[in-house]
Structure formats: C-alpha cells, structure tokens
Image 1 (cartoon, rainbow, N blue to C red):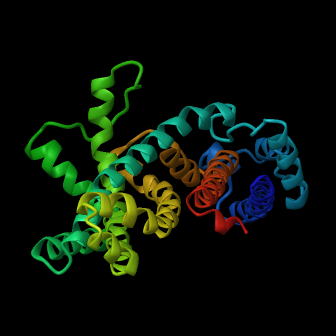
Image 2: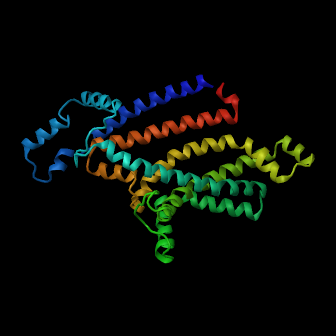
Length: 313
C-alpha cells in the first residue's frame, strides 16, 4: 500500500511540473502587455522599461520560468503586477472560500444523488425511475450559469429569501454564511448530482442482476439491507471514479458560478487577473487548482484501494 501511494505521489509530482511549464508558457504568450495595462493608455517608455526589469519580464522566458519556480519552491509566489501586493496573501484569502464552496457542492450533490440513484434502481422501469432519469437528463443538458440565474430569479427575486452575492465568514455569522452559500453551492451541485444519480442507477441495476443478489433475496435478506449494504458497495467503485472526476469539474464550474454570484473566491480572482494580464496571480491561481486536482485524484486512488484491495496490484 505504501509503495502504491509513493508511486502515485511521484506521478502526481511529474504532472504538476508539466502543468507548471504549460501554464507559464501559455500565459506569457497571451496577447497584451501587463506593464502597459498597468500604466494606462499613454505610458512613459522609460517607466515601462524600469517596471519590466523590476518584474523580470525583460529576460528570456526560460530564465523567467526557472526564476519563478525557484521562488515558488521557497514559498514566494511573487508580487501582483497590478497592485504590487504579495500574491501569496491574495490567493490564500480566496482558497478557503473556493474550497468551502466546492465542499458544499459535493455534499449537496451526494445528499441528492445517493438516495435518488438507489431509489431509481430499486424501482427500475417504473414512473419513479422515469421521473428521476428525465430530471437528471434535463439538469445535465442545462449550463451551470443558466441554472444559477434561474435559482437567483426564484429564491432571490420572486421569493426574496436568499441573497445573490457577497460573502460573510463562517466565524462571523453562521446564519448569513449559510444563506449566502446555498445558491452557489446548489448551482454547482445540480449538474453533478444528476450525473452521479445516473451512474449510481446504472451500476445498481447491473449489480442487482447478479446471481449472489438473487441468492440473498431467496435467503430472506431484507430489501433495504440488500440494496444499501450488499449491492451498493459493489456498485461504488465506478461512482467513486466519477466523484473524483467531478471534483475537478466542480472546481472548474466554481469559476463560472463565482462570476455569476460575485462570490469572492479564487475563480473570481483568476478571471479578474487574467483580464488585467496579472501574470503572477494567474499563475498562482491555476497552479493551486492543478495541485488540488492532482491531490484529489491521488486520494481517490487510495480510496479505491480501501474499497477493493485488488486494485493496488
């Protein structure tokens, strides 16, 4: 098990290094000069050269990359070109908010998907199954930003019971924090819950047709225990795979949702910095997303081993 985990960590490290090279190269080849954007429409050429040297943008891109990588390894993400603030402070203030939104989205998704997927499989080819499958298909087909706007119209405009934007710390006001979190979390969870429901339903139906399930039914095992304890465990591995992939999709979807709800997370900061060509901030944001995605995939692989030890071999 330890050897397997170390191997996955090694692959993850190689992946992160490759991603860092791609990110650095792509960002620096984007059109637009951040120094000129910083100085406005009529910049002073001498000041531009001074600023370019100050941020190291006058050096070859390979030199810039290794200089940036060396600083990152020492915990220095550099300074924002736009406001000259430490990048580490800017991103750390936002990471927790984005992770909190992602966590709430996953929880909402699983709370909806697990029971509905099991119920749909248990009542296969009934109106219950057809209704759940139809609703899931509709949610999968709708873009997340449209779902977010629909939720805003219903719960913020018509019913006026939930806010549409802002942020309050969990430690400051729990009630207001939960109210602000519900709409964006429900938005990112809707599509993921629909996909998970369909996956659980399909795998449960396949498992319920196996011989050992028939034998357990004949032995008098109760339906609830049969579904939840025996059938669901064997149907869980593909679902764990999907959930692991969904976390990455959720993090990508959170960027859109943060923009729709003006939620001050890492995604909103990245979009704003990308528009301003603030290279250090964009690089830091994307690298944090990449590292989190790789770590989540490693955790998912470890969970595989706990569910089915044969996988590690």
